Each structure stands twice: as C-alpha cells, then as structure tokens.
Length: 143
Image 1 (cartoon, helix red, strand yellow):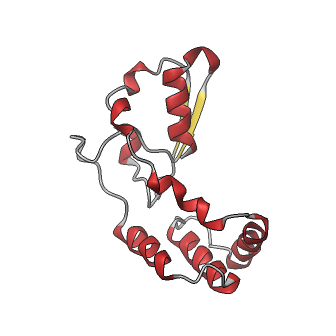
Image 2 (spheres, helix red, strand yellow):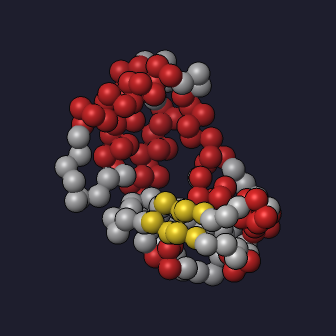
C-alpha cells in the first residue's frame, strides 16, 4: 500500500518528492489491464476470505489467524520464527484501536485514473522485491 501511495504522490506532486523506494509494491492497474500478470496466490485470497468468519473479539483466535497469515507471506530463505511473530501480533492487538482497519486497503477502488501513467514518474526510484513474494509476484516489478 505504501508503494502505491508513493507512486501517486510522485505523479501528483513531483516537486515534493526527491526519490521513492518501492518495497514489494504493485503497479497501477485496473481489473481489465492487458499486462497478463499473475494474480495474487489463491491461498492468500482464500485465507483472507475466511477472516470474515473470525470472532475478532477473541484475541487468541485473532492472534492465531494473523500469525498463520504471516506464514503465507514468507519465503523459504529463512525459517519462520513463530514465537517472534506471536509477540509482534500480540503487541499489534494491544496497540490497535480498530484492528480490522489493517484490512481497509482492500476496499480501495478507482485506480483507473492512474492506469498507464507509470512512465510519467521521472524521479529516482529504487525497487526492492523478493523473488518469493506470494502476494505480489516478481513479474510485477518488470511490468
């Protein structure tokens, strides 16, 4: 999400931006783009769809759900540290005033006005992307 915001700011207000760094970010595009890019891994979509059935007032269930979701997003280079993930998730749960808002970005619509405008970004841009990013396939970085 942050990468998309950075791209929008770079397009709309380039005078306010010296450079942008995009980490595992997607590109602008609508549902009907012609790029033939792979979709998000179906396991991730199915997993998040099941979040609608979760009792979000049960902190233990929420913690289990979020940690299991983290496993889906990890590559194979490093062993997943479940204890560390639980500690992080527990802090997030305690800190959040509305935990469900972490999923609000999926509600955003209307990116069509930016379709095809990537070429208009004329500032230094660093793209960092893992080869095993399950939500945003590496092919997006070359699009």
